[in-house]
Image (tube, rainbow, N blue to C red; front, side):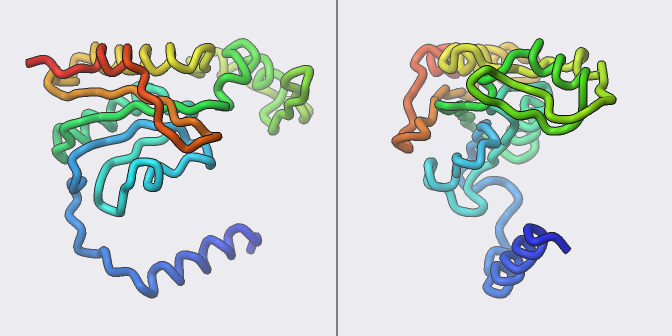
Length: 193
């Protein structure tokens, strides 16, 4: 057993020993959803004041409004009653450190973990790679505020998203812990009457 696996299982055993949340209802109690990044420095429960059962939290690389993220938001609304959505990107995001072309090139040469230094990304493994990376939109980030606006627009334009759901846009500052509103994103995401 790996050390990480053992640590996770021990932590779970301690958590389960005092578990008292088995009766929480499936719909989120505060009726909102958060789309945010998978970055380990972000703890939506802490920065948004959440407890178990409060909200849906959808996480992916960059907190981007991918087709799957939008699918989850629609399910969150249609079947589980969320009425407000937050799109929260963050400063110092890894998605700002590469482009689609860089990712495709790295995958074409090797499927092993790459490394980065002052001169950029480097493949650290030997082939084979795969051209399958050419068929993925990696949703990299060039401008953080602009990516929040783009994602809110993408969600708002989706034919399965009702106009009466407000969608708010924010950037979480990893240095201060503060949420900074992207006013244009929130404007674009405003609910229709």
